[in-house]
Image 1 (tube, rainbow, N blue to C red):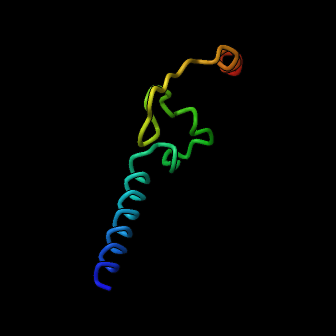
Image 2 (image 1 turned 30 degrees about the horizontal axis):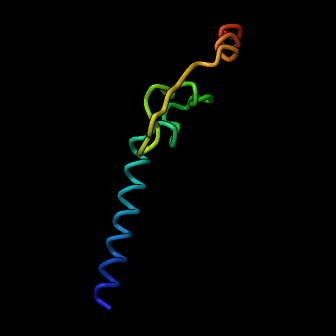
Length: 71
């Protein structure tokens, strides 16, 4: 019975720690600036996942042209 309580406490502490880590360090979870388009602020070169393997980011030319037309 005691090991089960220990495992459950460890799992609860880990889940709480992970939740707080993602809440305060990831820019796409909370819109702190009040910007209606917060996805424009995310740096595409910085990985947003905890583990990223072989991620390559390339700009989409059509979207870049569209952004230039809207500004």
